[in-house]
Amino acid sequence: MKLRDRVVVGFCLSLVLVTVLFVVDMQNENARRLSVADGGDAAAASHFHGRSDRSRDADEAQSAWNAAASFVASTLMPSVRPQQPQPTRSGAPQPYPQPADGRPRPIVPDLYAGDRFADLTERLSRSSEWQRHRGYVLDWTAVRDVIVDDTDEDGIISNEYVVEYLEDGLRPNTTALTIFHSRISKREMYPKNDTYVPLILKNMSVSPILSVAQKEGGTQLKLVIEYLNGDKALMKPMRFTREQQTLPNHFYFTDYERHNAEIAAFHLDRILGFRRAMPVSGRLVNITSELMAQVTASDLLKTFFVSPDKNVCFHGQCSYYCDTSHAICGNPDMLEGSFAAYLPSQEVLERKTWRHPWRRSYHKRRKAKWETDPNYCELVRNVPAYNSGRRMLDIMDLSVFDFLMGNMDRHHYETFTLFGNDSFPIHLDHGRAFGKAFHDEMSILAPIIQCCHIRKSTLETLLRFHNVKKLSEHMRESMADDPLSPILWEPHLTAIDRRVGLILQKVRECLSVSTMSGEDAAEETRVRTAANATFDVDTGDVGQEVKYTVRSRDITQD
Image 1 (cartoon, rainbow, N blue to C red):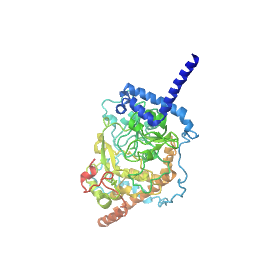
Image 2 (cartoon, rainbow, N blue to C red):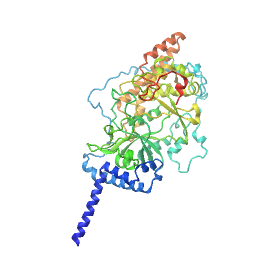
Image 3 (spheres, rainbow, N blue to C red):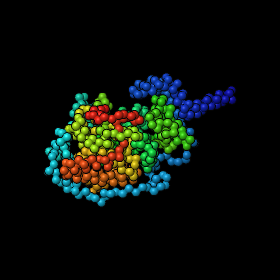
Image 4 (cartoon, rainbow, N blue to C red):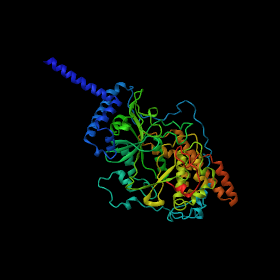
């Protein structure tokens, strides 16, 4: 009798062990889960409407999966993983001091490192000679000043806040991010020294993750992260270490996105005083317990696997680089990522999408009108949204911002419709920035080169970073507290300082042209534009061939 009991118990334990081992196999688990969760697709569809809409079977399936994933991480995975300490903040992948292939770094001379641009400083001191536009340029076709002062008479900029338009006010259970949304204004995303930004950065980097879904659209993989308090963030996972640059044979529209570029762009936007980007924080996540365990959509879940090197990987589904050969892998299951706070929903604060007037072609051979027409800016000046108000100077600011990062991927931008055409352009989607530390892409400065305008406050900021305390020093200090610090490879910080001087030189050239006679100035503008016309731009979508005839609607068309 006792022997028979032992046999029965042993047989039952064997069945349990076989079942657990079966769960460990990722693909068999996916197939099993599809059948358990009522066909999988229904569970996935319900997830996108919120976790509260799941069926009871789907909840049971999720609980089973969480238990299995925990078992995998704690029991089985250590036996197959390399014996190495788990990465922490100090042990996370860090920039290498030299290129991975051992070649010496290129030397790019900083032509203006010793130039203090005293002529620009002196020009700024003669502000009494300028026309002050009192916060709003009435007619850009009549403006020929290079340095444009759009502050009010008392030296400040008028503003309006979203909270002034909220009918119901804030809910009792309001989060830091919701309060942040209510403080968005016509001029900036958040005020200087805002106390909610550090809270949002902290919450995104440590708060438990409730659910994970793949963001629809876009060319590369991005994940929508939902936290327990209902806040959301957009995660861009790490593909490469910091020193990996844009591949030489890749166009700007086929370049990989870099998670650290999103983090650095937020800090650069804040340091420049623009404050038009949402807060972005780095975070080190466990792919198994924090990402895979919180995924309910079968299409995403089935892309997780264990690589031959025993690392946990996934690739999702997207236009570019979403296959096994371009998978995102952990070390062995720890992964860096950038977490960008979500904008308010369209129902709360509607946004409008605009084509950038100096957008690129996203075509390997075609050029755009602005590359070949030296008078292209005159067309832009006559188009609504750019013919009056602040938008023209905002585009100049955006040009400065993108040039400092080396970001060529600026095809659209968004504004808040609440404030009409006087709303600031939102600075978002900077994953393809900081890809070429040893090349300065002058075509990004095309708006400033062709229009010869720059905002007075922006010029003052650039001169301060060039002559007093370098912009790279501000960046190091600002990014030091990020969980993934250091964020940028050192050559990128060197490039930022070098590019500040290049912008100032272009402003100097514009000022020299503005003092010429009309005919000489026109010829100089034509020559200068042609000299900088190394651009590759068009109005078509990726891979789409479009004939271009310039009309005003071509600039403003969504």
